[in-house]
Amino acid sequence: MNAELFIAKRIYRGDKKNDKRVSSPAIRIAIAGIALGLAVMIVAVCIIVGFKKEVRAKVIGFGSHIQVSAFESNASYEHTPIAISDTLLAQLNANPAISHVQEFITKPGIIKTDDDFMGVVLKGVSEGYDWQFFRKNLLEGSVIESGDTTSGNRAIISRVIADKLLLKTGDNFTCYFVQEPVRARRFRITGIYETNFEDYDKLYIITEKEVLARLNDWDDDMASGIELLVKDYDKLDATAQEIFFAMADHKDRLGNAFYTRSIKDINPMIFNWLDLLDMNVWVIVILMLVVSGFTMISGLLIIILERTNMIGILKSMGARDFSIRRVFLYLSAFLIGQGMLWGNLIALLFCFIQDRWQLLKLDPSTYYLSAVPVDINPLYIILLNVGTLIVSLLMMIGPSYLVAKIRPAKSIQFE
Image 1 (cartoon, rainbow, N blue to C red):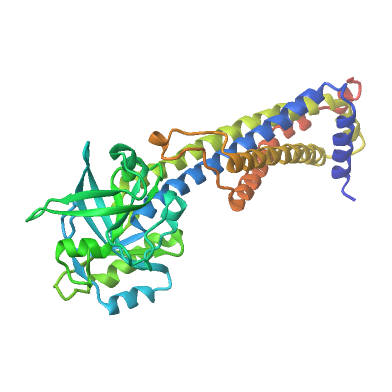
Image 2 (cartoon, rainbow, N blue to C red; image 1 turned 90 degrees about the vertical axis):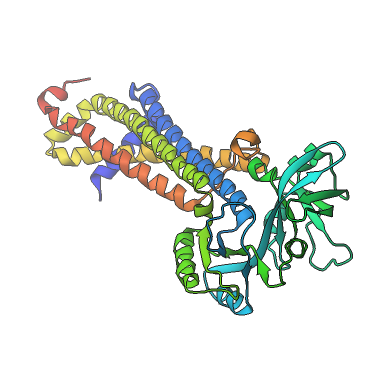
């Protein structure tokens, strides 16, 4: 039988029943410190992970994970076209890391209405385009259905553009394209979307690839580039590098070399900003561990001082210092475990309520989101719990050495 564990259980249960002890408030404060610290850590991680995931999804929704285009120094939205062969598409689709392949054309234009005008970028998408992102953010109307051939020049616009130009679903608008000669096309609005990512919402109009190809006088196999969606975002860098070297030796029938970039390369400022958010998480975790640890240290010291008489009796009966220290380390583990249980309940309840009802709102113009996002990742929560338990117990080792300073002859008389 583990005598140290037995004694620790008796002390733990006895202290819970005897509220008159001096240690009772200290124990409650220590448990509350652990609970609050762990709850803050879990909530902070869930919010930061959720925020990064949501913002990243918006950027990827407009630009995919990987883009293959012509090798050029042109940084505008008017790209040099590439000729896309069936062999190239088959090669990309055969890659096990790629989940979807789609062609696109981008072209800048100017929308002119009776009262206002606005510069935009039209993105023409192919028939096999993945509409999942825009369906999720669609406010009204519908996306451009590939089977509907009754009317051409269809487009979906953002709420920002619609509000500025006083447009609604079903309306028509004229877009002018600055080229030689200047051309104009009339589009019909089939849907209005809103992602709260204003930098892109005020810029992009989604239309059909064939419309922009005719404007550019391009052949059917020509496009601005190819968008690739990967199955595992964590392997994005490795997949992009693999595609880069695979495409480096290829040239299309026009003699163009292919250039491969990941979404991180296309939008480095946004992804660098998201990476900096990890530093905030580490700061919060370290501060909460320190605060929780010191509250536990103070609580354990009070318990040891209050149990001086018991420690003296155990020493007089032949108990070693290490054995008595184990008693108080077991007791600390019970208290830490109770605090962690409450911390998990508080954090998970908060995350569930926020995810379900989105009570905490954000300014979309600043944060790109209308509410505080949460992403409950079981792995992160388990790691936080294990890390909190280990760090808290390690911090208890130092105070437990106070047991060695207690002398049986004096402590037995201590009350």
